[in-house]
Length: 91
Image (cartoon, rainbow, N blue to C red; front, side):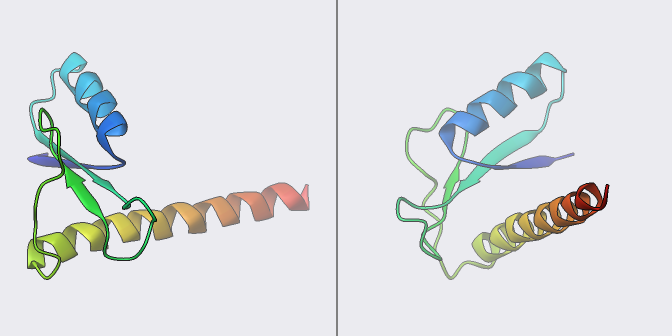
């Protein structure tokens, strides 16, 4: 892939970059994390080797699309977990 989007902040981004490099995957990586109070639209975008989050306008189409991707990944994960848990409860 040209870009890997990690759901998490600086720590998760660093771990993902380390793993991708060990696998010789040469693609750009960014991390998307909730703000300090986890309020909507306080999401932060981190890039490797940068101390502070990337300053993207909250109204930016790019920012909104990245958040849509992250939210879809969350929706899929929650739905899969619920389905798995439902099957487990039936046993």
